[in-house]
Length: 121
Image 1 (cartoon, helix red, strand yellow):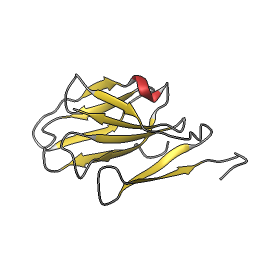
Image 2 (image 1 turned 135 degrees about the horizontal axis):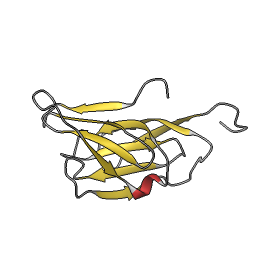
Image 3 (image 1 turned 90 degrees about the horizontal axis):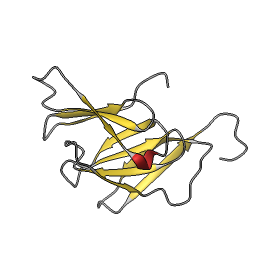
Image 4 (image 1 turned 180 degrees about the vertical axis):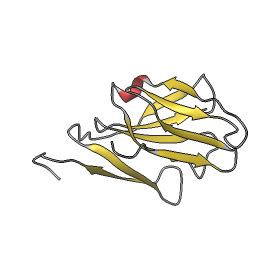
């Protein structure tokens, strides 16, 4: 990807971003710390994060979209001991998840997918 997807948790001062296939970056106390950590996420299924979004409803929860069409909710994202949940539903494996917008509750999400050269929208 041309621009690395990231999001900042302004309540807890933590920064999250794409890292490499199967993992994400967590940078705690981003305004004062100089080091970050990579967390592995099996539910990425070998994909790389193509979208990162901090939950506006649940502390330390981050939504990730991947380059292989997965949407993964990570609880305790600020720790080394995460809880990961694949919430993809119907997968569009030939597509990148370009955005996961949050609605009025933690259970209300809208995802968009992007692709180039695929035969579906």
